[in-house]
Image (cartoon, rainbow, N blue to C red):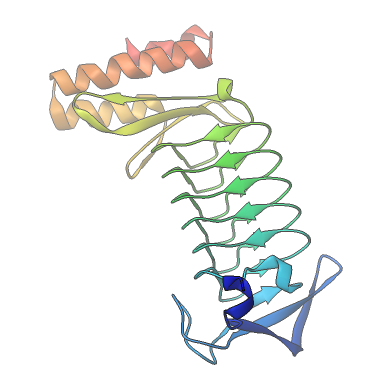
Length: 237
C-alpha cells in the first residue's frame, strides 16, 4: 500500500468558510494534524480544491493567501500573507511566496526560491535554487532564474537578454543588473537602485580598491550587454 494511501490527511476544507475570488469559490483550510508550520485545528489560507495543496509533506497555505485554478503547492513549500498562486503554476521544494506576490500562468517556483512583496512571476518562467524575486519585479516569458539571482525594485525581465549577473573572487554574492520600464537597475544584497548610485556607495566604502574595481568592471560588462546607449555606460567609466 502506498504512503499516500496510509498517510492521514493533514488538512481539510472548511466548507462553511469561503470567499469569492476571480469568480471562484475558495475554501479556508484547517490543519487536522501537527506538521511543519501548522498545528492541529489551525486555520490556514484559501484554496479552491484539494488538488491545490498536497496532503503530503509540510506544504501549507496560511494567512489570507489563495491558491486556485489548477495551481499546486507541494513538498515543503509555503504560500503566506496575501500571496496568490493560480493558473497552472507549481510551487514546490522549500520555496515561499509571500506578501502580495503573484505566481500564475505555467510558472514554476521551487527549491529554495522566494517570491515576495508585490512581485509577479508568470508565463513559462522558472525560478529555482536560491533566486529571489521581490519589490515590484515582474518576471515572465520563457526564462529560468537560478543561483543567487535577486531581482527587485521595478525590474522587468522576460528573457535572458534583460538581465546580467556577475560575481566571483572578492564578490561573494551575485550582483544583478537588469532592465526596468524606465532604465537599468542594480540589485545587490540590500541595495536596489541605479548602477551609478551603487558605484558611488561602493567607492565611499572601499575607496579605489581591488573590490571597487571588480564592481566597476562587472557593471561595465553588464551595461554593455544590456544597453548600447552610451549614456548608460558612462557610470562605469
